[in-house]
Length: 181
Length: 181
Image 1 (cartoon, rainbow over the protein chains, first blue to last red):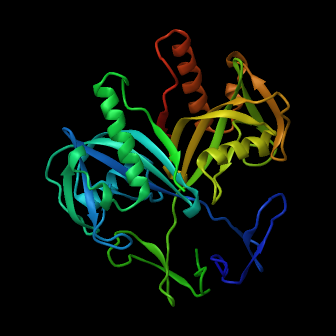
Image 2: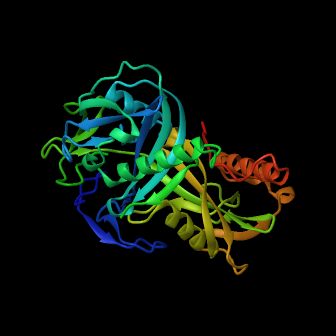
């Protein structure tokens, strides 16, 4: 950040009164421009024992597999964002979304929030950011071709929890949390 | 937003290629300036059957009661942000934080994320944004003097869940979600 988005004059890094860290402050109008982490909202879309993955049509990690998800937009809830991204990236209509996981990646100022949801129908297809959209059983997940470590983390939690529910060691899915380096 | 924070030239509202909504786009360098919801991280800090509230020293809602919390900063996890805010606003040291609630306020582009945590000691006191810091039992909560509707919502969930745990209708605290108009 070099210029004030309000008045167009240069910003300087300084610690505002009462604050304890450097902010971008306008040298003229004195507005403080805070920068904060962003939320990525996504879904584990389930049909029977399979889940929906998308192969990425865009960089970074073009061709690798991911869960549908993307940046939360102003004016929507996290759940709405997760549902919207599934529709945009996989033309997938989802129902019964349930919060499932929250993973921080503080290094890149991101918080990933995932829902479990049921596919309302099997009429999904690649959106413009996807090359393919495929339902995978656990045995067929392309573990070595996942786009991001956070996707690996959330999928391993999901299948572990699902097995524990089948074995009656868990009553229901918990909400998983953690941080990715 | 009027000016590009990168090059200082005017921005215009337009829909970038492949996008579906208006963004602030620089008229010169063509950078797209996305605006996204922000996270407020907070804590229900517990000692025995009481919880810690702070009366606000600052506007908005000066003098009214709230849970310690504030905007998540770049470089920290949501949990770290909740712990930090409790230290800043109430000089309260917390342990055993557990994710408890996520409430969206899409109208103002905010997502509130609360943890349950135990007070490590009773040596808390008002930080610079608080007038008073007080442990309240459920019967003494100043329900008519809470600063924000989301605080009312999360506290009512908390005491309801706690009662259900005492009555053995719940095994443990769930993670509560919802949206506030």
